[in-house]
Image 1 (tube, rainbow over the protein chains, first blue to last red):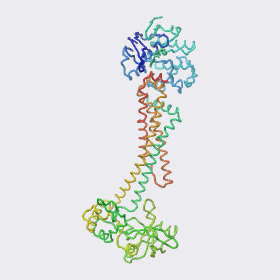
Image 2: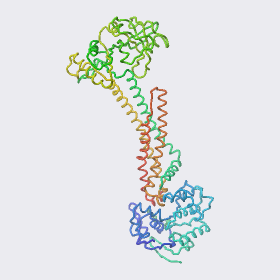
Image 3: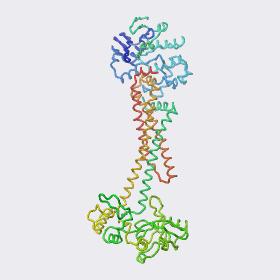
Image 4: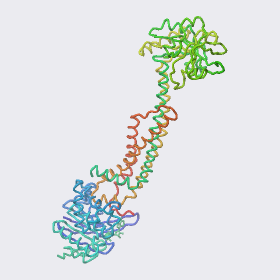
Length: 226
Length: 407
Ligand SMILES: Nc1ncnc2c1ncn2[C@@H]1O[C@H](COP(=O)(O)OP(=O)(O)O)[C@@H](O)[C@H]1O
Ligand SMILES: [Mg+2]
C-alpha cells in the first residue's frame, strides 16, 4: 500500500534552510497498524503530511497504491485526500462556528454524498470515535479538548478511508476514551484499513503491530511487535 | 461539491458576520440605487421634453428667420428678432409647396397685458385660424377669430387658460371682457383648452390675435416670426422641408444653402436634438452614480480579502479533507456574488424609492425601466465576480499545510 524511498524534506525560509527529513524509506502493507514514535521536532508530522498527500517531499518517491504521489498534480492530490485518506490533525482543526455533526459531515460534502445519508453516516462515525450522542448538535468551540479530538477522529473515519493517519490522536483523551479510540483503530485495521498513528506514549504504541522510531529526520528503528 | 451545499456554505458565511456583510453590501446598495435613480430621472426628463415637443402639433415643420448656418456665422441674433421672413413668404409656401395640410404664419412677441385692475406679461401671437389645426389648439369657451376678421383688422383676442387665471381669476368667464395689449383695447372672444403647462413653452399662457392686427398695430411691420407648416403625413416631411428651403432660397436670392437666412426645422429634428441633450445629461448622472458603484465593488473585494485571511485555517482544512481548488474558489466567489446580488436587490428598491420621491416632490415623471433594473442586477452580479475573483483565487491557491499552520 505505502512505499517510501529515501524521502527528504527541506524547508527554505530566505537564507535559512531546515532539513527535516533526511532520507526515509519504508513499506506499509494494506491493513497494517503502524505507530510512529520519536521526540518532538524529529519530523513525524512532516512525514505524516507527505503520507497524507497534503505535502510533497523535496526528493525521493512515495508510492500509494502503486501511484507515485510525489509527481501528482494538485487536482489529483485532492482526489486522493478525498477518496483514500482520513487525517486526524494534532491541532484538531475543527470549524469553530459549526456543530459537531456538520464538522464530521464536511468530508461527505466534498465527496458529494447525498444530503439525506450524511447525517446517518456522520453519527455512526461519531459513535465509533466514542462521542457522547448528547453533544452532536453542540458547536465545536464549546467542547473540551478530549471531545474535540473525538470529533476530529470521527471526521477522519467518516469517508471509510483505506488509509487513516492520526497525529497524536490520544494526546488529549482520558485513558478510557483513549482505549475506545484505539480499539476502534484496531478493528478498522482488522477490517482492512491501513492505520498510521503518531504517539509519544509506549502504551498507545502497544496497540500497533509495528513501531517505527524516528529521530532527527531518520529512521532509528523499525520493529514488529506483533 | 454540489450547488445547494455551496449555497448553504455561502449562507452560513454571509450570516456569520451580519454587521460586516451589511456594511459591505451598503456600498453596492448605494451604488446600484443611485444608478437606478439617476437613470430614471434622466429618462423621465427625456420623456417630458419629448412629450412637450410633441404636444405642439404633429407632422410639424417650423420655418424661422435669421438663423445663419454658414461658416463663420456662429452668432445669430436670436429667433424672432430677425425680420427677413414675411407674410409674402408664407403665402408663397402655401401656393407652391405641395403636400401641405395647413400653414399658419405667426408673429409672436411678449407684451404687457392689462385687464380691470390686473396685469400680466405674456406671449401675444398674431396668427391665422389655421393655427388651431397646425398647432393642435382647441377652443374651450367662445370661438377663435375667423378669416374675415384678419382682413378687417379686428381687435379681438383668444386667451389661454393660464392668462385667464392671471387676468380674470380662476373659473371666470373671459368671453366678452376687454383687455389692453400695449395700451390697445381688445375684446376677448374665446379661451383655449388647457394643454398642461409642462416643459419649456407654456401654451396655456398665451394670447392669440389676428395676424394682420398684430402686424399693423403692435409690430408695425409685416414680418413673421415663425411659419408653422403641417404636412399631410409623416412621409412627406423631408420633401416639404426641401421644397420650402428651395423656395425661400430662391425668394431671398441666396445661392448657397449654407448661407440661408432662415431655418426649416422638422419636429423630429427638434425631438432628436432635445433627446440627445437629455441623453447626455442622463449619461452624466449615471456615470457619476457608476463611480459609487465601483467604490462599492472595491469594498466587496476588501472584505473578501479580509475574510480569506481570517479563514485561512478553515481553507487549509477544507483542502486537507478533499476540497478541490474549484470548490474553494467557488465558495468565496459565491459569497461575493451573493453580497453584491442582495445589495443589487436592495439598491433597485432604494433607487425606485428615490425616483418615486423625485416624481412626487420635483414633479418630473420618472420611470424605472425594466431594462435598467435588469442591467443593475447584471452589473451587481458582475461586480461580485470581478471583485470576488482575486480573493477567491488567492484562497484556492493556498497550500493546505501552510494554511493550517497560519496563526
Ligand atoms: N514550514 C516550515 N518551515 C520551517 N520549518 C518547519 C516547517 N514545518 C516544520 N518545520 C520544522 O521541522 C521540524 C519537524 O517538525 P514536525 O514534523 O512538526 O515535528 P514533530 O511532529 O515530530 O514534532 C521542526 O523543527 C519544525 O520547526
Ligand atoms: Mg507533530
